[in-house]
Image 1 (cartoon, helix red, strand yellow):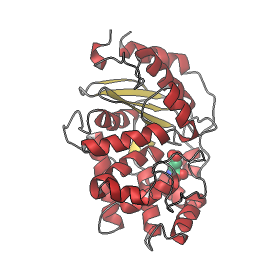
Image 2 (tube, rainbow, N blue to C red):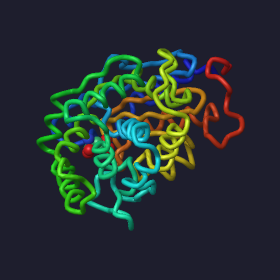
Image 3 (spheres, protein in one colour):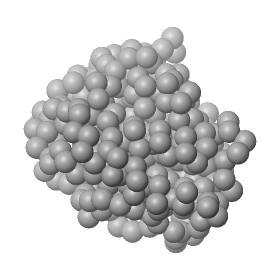
Image 4 (cartoon, rainbow, N blue to C red):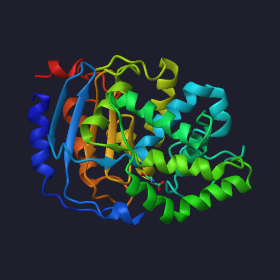
Length: 315
Ligand code: GLU
């Protein structure tokens, strides 16, 4: 079955699945329309296959984490970054307070503590330039200028007491510097970057395409750092579902509480789903189902030796 026909069928199959709850983490996020649903597949050849509410924007939330991790690696190198943040799954909630490893590091850059530390690593003169640096880095992956949703940003800034607590504890343990409040603001900003499923899929296609944006041809991530980013997405990207996900779906991915999922099929495509109703672990209910179906149907699992060579050649 061709890919456009497949996503049409899968979209139709799950369109009326209204199970799950929209995130209640902070007010602006809990007010989104729960019914929106879109699927986008951006290939390494620069093609796009998509269906659903394609114009609908949403904030990237935790799907920002692998991109900020990539930028920190580009700026400082693997050893420096790994000295600050570990690479082990936690088995705990993404916003748990607070588990550090035996070297006093957050467990990994995909949980909030690790992501807040990573945001603090971004090399720039001050808050404004850090924010700009991140935004322009993300925009390179998307192949066009991205913006920040100020309403979501302010709502999280004002209401996210748990993230403030995490940042204070990180400071208490001397994991963060005296600038920790600014670093947390950078983190809130990165979570508030607006995308739609097409833009997110293209960000993923850049990861799938050896770090090179398939449309603009800009190299956004070196080969070595790409390997690090995809590895951590594979082991820690789907909250406390990451182990089962690796087993069943078998692809690097990252989920966010706004209801987005980004899944990478290395060498082939970035796949983005937006559907805000979440399961108990914080993953989009319809998003998980779509990813499972696509992976099974096309044998995308990275340990499957019958994965197709190119999306456009799928019959
Ligand atoms: N901004 C959210 C937080 O820090 C992101 C969480 C997520 O998407 O997992 O709590």
